[in-house]
Structure formats: C-alpha cells, structure tokens
Image 1 (cartoon, rainbow, N blue to C red):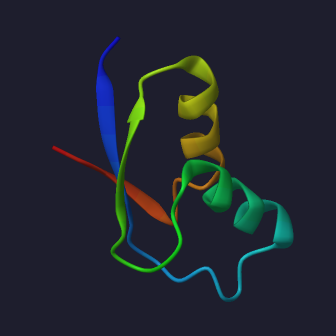
Image 2: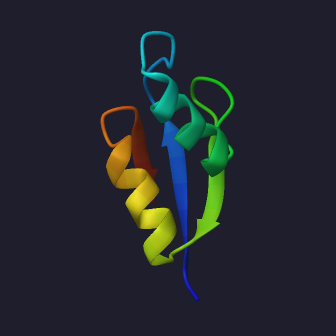
Length: 58
C-alpha cells in the first residue's frame, strides 16, 4: 500500500485530551515532527480528527 507523510504544524498544548491521544497514535510527538504511515482508512480517519493540527507533506 502507499504511504503518506504527516507533519505536525500546530501545537498540541491547548488541544483536548482526545486529540492529544490521536497525535500520539499517529506517532507525532512535537512540533514540525514528520512521520510516514500507511495510507489506510484508520490512519486517514485519525488525520481527519486532527486536520487543524497536521499537514500532509509530499
């Protein structure tokens, strides 16, 4: 399957606990951190939940 790169672009400080757990599940630990994940429906759903905190990198 294809992979996508996800970058955290905004701080998690004022985010609700649920969104912080989602960032942890994606593997994003700090600002400007980039991870590469499989392009699966579950990962896309997690990205949708925190779309205001992350960006897809080419």
